[in-house]
Amino acid sequence: MDFFNRLFVALTELHPTHPMFVHFPIALTGAAFLFVLLAYWRKSPALEQAAFANIVLASISTVAAGFTGYIDNINNYVGEAPNATMKIILAVTLFLLTAAISIVRYRNPEIFQKGNRLLYMASYGLSFAIALVLAFLGGVILYGF
Image 1 (tube, rainbow, N blue to C red):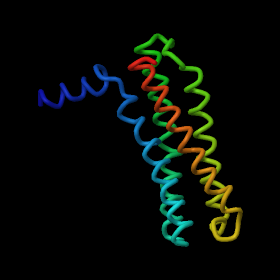
Image 2 (image 1 turned 120 degrees about the vertical axis):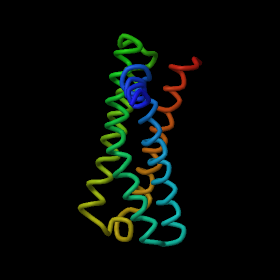
Image 3 (image 1 turned 90 degrees about the horizontal axis):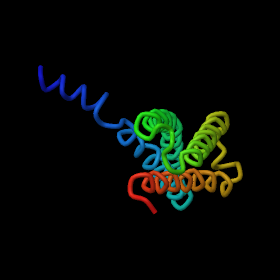
């Protein structure tokens, strides 16, 4: 039982929670972009559906990563982490973009076959690029620049 108590304290009080959540939006936007590119190349509806599933999960995980990042900024940096304002702006932008992609695709399942494919794919690429910039700025907080 002591192990579980120590684990609970480590997860809730000792270690910051943001690092446990932050990698999901990065990986999911990257996977979504890869799948949509593969869907275009292979003309595969199944790969486009995989891209859609990943972008939906990226949208949800962006909320978790943003919330934990905001809390960790307050707890560990007294709200003064380097580039915090820019990270908040980019995180909100990433959420809005991934949510918009998800909603548009949900309402129009044929968008990849009948819509503007290049704009659709570019939105996936932009979401991944924003996630990478957020990752870089997170590294700046820890390691400097």
